[in-house]
Length: 476
Ligand code: ADP
Ligand code: MG
Ligand code: ZN
View 1 (cartoon, rainbow, N blue to C red):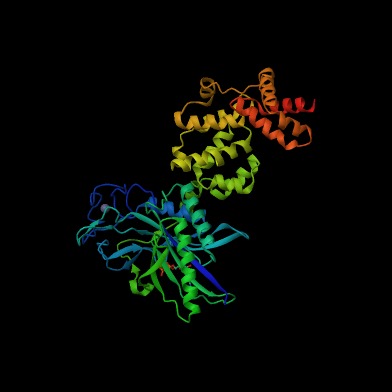
View 2: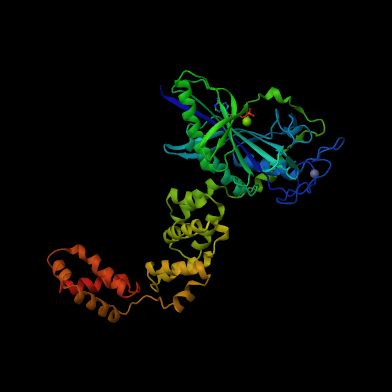
């Protein structure tokens, strides 16, 4: 039997507000345990939460950027459960009246564009963190993170493959980064994803029973965990078994999932409206204000870059994955009008350099101005494209400007035909057999001669001139 996967994702993004969602404590990461706490986020009796307006602003922006409708009235609810990192015994979340609903984003798939529905986006508070002592049977709790604002983005079960899930996550991630409302760093845990997955026989309408996967700390791992789970569920069904609704943890080292606990249903949480918080009324003016604050979004920017700089869609998409990369490209393109060359260098040499040093583009050792300068040196014939790569490497190490490097290392391209002619003569004289073969019709040897001459001039000879001179001599 042929099976098809059905995937829906729940993403938790930590919002980058300065203070927590219901108290004034700092959200700054890395402070000594329990120093960013107060009676509210410690869950002392009798204290009252006060909503941070900025968190609502940010979530409205996300809702607008993902084509959601913003609810005129939303309400907070208590989600009741016990865990030692949750001092109140409940998490303040939203339940029957979320802030945003019925949105969608577009992803690229192998068979074209596809819309993935967004069921809802709501606000909630994060819990604290347990720190398990590796040497003794002791666990400690740090409540600095308790009360940090989270936005939960729930998708419709619209994805059918692990790749689609990965593409959806990357789209959400880019939007969050463009909006500048979350660091959205998966490894640091401020962008977390739970993946719900079931399978069903191809052609069947009804969904199968889902498992919920947790503990994936990269996009790649989400895709791998889903791929594993599709296989596990398929084998299970083929052997006549049944998938049970449960939460499973992904073990990246072993690349498998294993059961963590049976999955609760909503009614297990005894949700009820939080009597300490008034409903939030969002009027048109508030929404409009947030709409005005929206920057150009990844999809819009991709279309504009393709159009304005004559780039292929895929190339524009590559640049727009991270806002900073597109910024870098545009800065460079503002100074060097050979846009194709700018793209090639940013996506080629520059990306390779960043990958090799494990840097992001904001930490790039070569400024956009310097790269543009380098490209201009190629264009005006001062250096060849080949030498430019050497200059680029030196720029990455020393931080010097390309002009300075070219001058100090004597890398200026040789365009003096007398000098090149001498090298040509020497090379041809040293390889009489190849010359004879060439004249006998083995025209492919041209590359061999040019290579030797470039070697002799340390790559500094103008390649066009070399070609011209060699052909002229050999055709004599
Ligand atoms: P819960 O809190 O119980 O996980 P949510 O409504 O927050 O419930 O999230 C449910 C997620 O699971 C959504 O992303 C939804 O698209 C997805 N989902 C629901 N049913 C299925 C199913 N049968 N197979 C795969 N995904 C599903
Ligand atoms: Mg869930
Ligand atoms: Zn506090």
